[in-house]
Length: 310
Image (cartoon, rainbow, N blue to C red; front, top):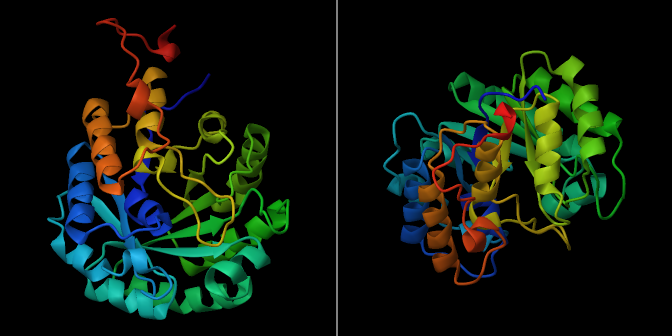
């Protein structure tokens, strides 16, 4: 297989994970988790969402979290900004990068942000102009790119439409989200092959939820098609408030573990990362779905084994 030498991991647990928890995680614990994630080698972390506190009370401390971070050199911190007010708050908080979020499914988008897809994109055009003038980086999510629990299969043409809109806005990176965990390796391969010709210099990432246990399989399929940026969540935290069935993202420690076993570098210290997952479990106060949390990493007793070298 023609595997890449390295892969970039975008940690989304502090946002995607905490927004889905029924309880409120204390601000100092959120900050501590992000700092620990920064210490293990992660270079990109989505720390929060500047969303209405009434809509997502779990993230009502966005400004406090952003202000409390030590901002490690070389680490890029991102926040979700669902609307212009959220963008203004992110600017005042000194964010390096913002993320926009729209669903490929009309029904899911209306349930999630109470807007049609077109209305969301119309707002994003102005937001992107404002952010880019300030030198901010922007990544654009396409949620439900592989399927919607309300509408079923989502056509590639629906996804392409949003991708082309994002490219026209000047967004630097697009993340395709399997929000409801309905993707499979064949669908992933097909999606990447269809989108690659229109992406140009725009980077693309994959954001897999592990709702049906297919997350890692989908990652491997994407890697074999040339993908090299993946979103994941510490401990397997995550979900979507607008989804009835969506569970957590692929666990960061599980993803890093399998990539290292395949001989692919991430720049992340896996032993330390598992300790961070244990800290996440502690502050959440319940068992998390990440496999390495219970099984630990593969122990070859000193042997250096990489599947790619065999």
